[in-house]
Amino acid sequence: MKKILAVDDEQEIRTLLKEYLEMENYLVYTAKNGMEAMEGLKHQPDLIILDVNMPDMDGYLVCEKIRDYVDCPILFLTARGEEQDRVNGFKAGGDDYIVKPFSMDEMLARVEAHLRREERKQKNSNVYIKGDLTIDFSGYQVLLEGEDVGLTRTEFLIVELLVTHSGQVFEKEQIYQRVRGFDGEADASIIAEHVRRIRQKIDKSKRHIETVWGVGYKWIG
Image (cartoon, rainbow, N blue to C red; front, side):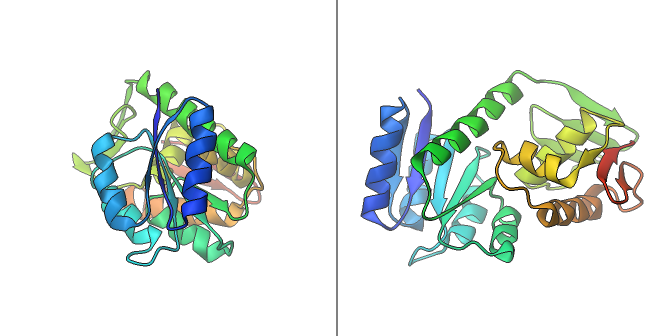
């Protein structure tokens, strides 16, 4: 049984998430603030649903803190819908962004998509090596000259997609949908920001990721 940690300061939302997801055979733990979320890591959740607007510390800060201990998918849950809010969420280490009010069917679809991706990754133990660049797919690590470059989870998923389809051009919208794990409304500007950050960390000379102008990106490493 997969374990989910649902963090929200609203009792009604915590109850809704717990009851609905338990009906779908998930084991659900809840927390009402950042401190309880940290304590909830002892349950080793397979996925975390994390509210952004909480009184003691916001979800972005909580996400940054728990990323030191867990590598599971983190889905932000918030009333904010602005592009910069979404960018901040991905920068903090989140994997998806669900805006309130939301449908439970959409929530379940996103949860299932992220968990399916995790299962596929656990079966993949390949390592990619090219020059001074090493990608450990099972360990979620990208090493440059033997040092972990510190990609966020979303950045790693983009690299993984491009590397495992080397030479294939992906539109920004395609990357967005594949990485999110749900065919929602694509946001190309977020992908451009992620690629910029990836290049800062591993590809300043653009030896690996090529921009196909007007289309998207491909791996040429």
